[in-house]
Length: 127
Image 1 (cartoon, rainbow, N blue to C red):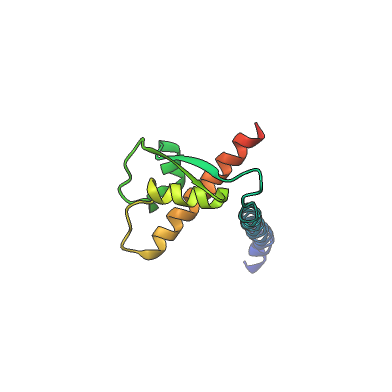
Image 2 (image 1 turned 90 degrees about the horizontal axis):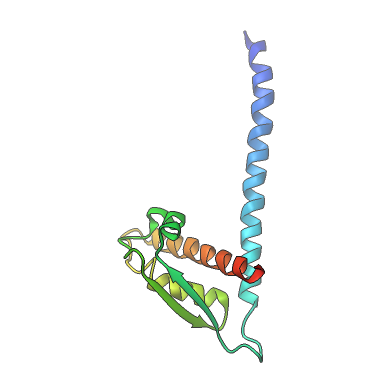
């Protein structure tokens, strides 16, 4: 009876290990992207970087339940010395404006909103 489990165990363990490796690689890539954005501060030619964040259905879906009572279909444009600063401020003013009782949820809301803002900003720059 024990012999039946060995092939099953041999198939499950590599799947779990590869799934973990994929998640770690994805997280490291996200951290690297955020580090590279932090380094892009104003140059002599650029005084401000402006970002527009809206509480669209797509943004609220990305942030999930971490945004508390957002006002749908509102937008704000914020300028800062870097994309990261502008996105953080815009997210704090629109999507993550109402504070949760659980402090960690506020941080998660800001991180997810920031990440989506930066991703959308970089995809529009590439176009």
